[in-house]
Image: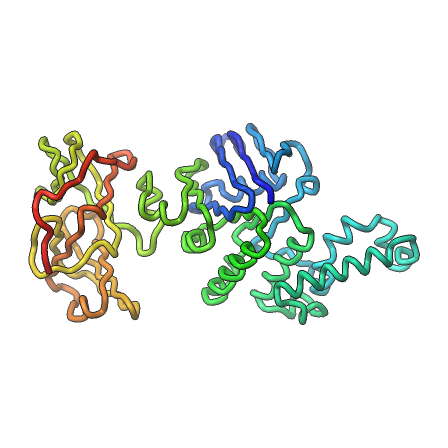
Length: 386
């Protein structure tokens, strides 16, 4: 198992900065995902690790070896691309064998007719065939070796692309949005297979995606990137429950976190739309933004402290859950509450409704989006009861 260390990586295209001094430590054997919106620099960072891009500043180390200036082939990493990049004229077996043929056979030994007659060529070719069969068996594509890419489904092509990288036994696996071309059902299946593959191999995985659901379900840690910078690196659980920045809070989680404008008065008490919200923060007076996850809101029969009152804007039926959108003062957009079908079965558009939240589930952010951590957040009044 091999670690990866990035030190102050910067990259610009002309006058446009793409990476702004990114530093990151990836532990040996870790599954780390780079996630962020399109254009945030995550794919450029991955390509820099692979040696496909050259940074303007900074250093990349793989294990105990600094690889700056080394060609991709010398870095002992394997990369799986979004487009699969399979050779259409080759069979699955040929695609899987190609990296090994390029590494283990000389240019003369690779010649179609003469090559097999050269010393050692037959033995090496047989060993390559053995390794290909082993990888194909581990990915459940051993029955597809004679087919060409055009005869495969999207999921099968993706397995072949992974197998072609895996057959080299690299020190680090790099994946650039490998599931984005698959349909939703197949994407979920492939997520499970990649997670199991990582568990079985123990190789360091660095994975790029814009899909926060993929990042949260696959990773040991997630690195959130915004505008060429790392905003936060943490476990999926910590990113969700303890975001350091409002950008992380809004990007992670589906449905997204509710953001509600509020003020802190001279007594350190939070007010929403001028009404006391039932929190004493100990913070200096000023404007704040409250972040509340949909599952932290629950329906109550009457208004009280830490309660938002409004009217139902939309009800989304998800089977085991309902998402109830409530228009309320203080929020620029309807607040979304996750409810059970029993809690919200009678609700319809236009109904008056009250939703309450526990003090412990309220996150606070300042005007610049930075997380505020009050010295204490005791409730001023008892919680509202349903």
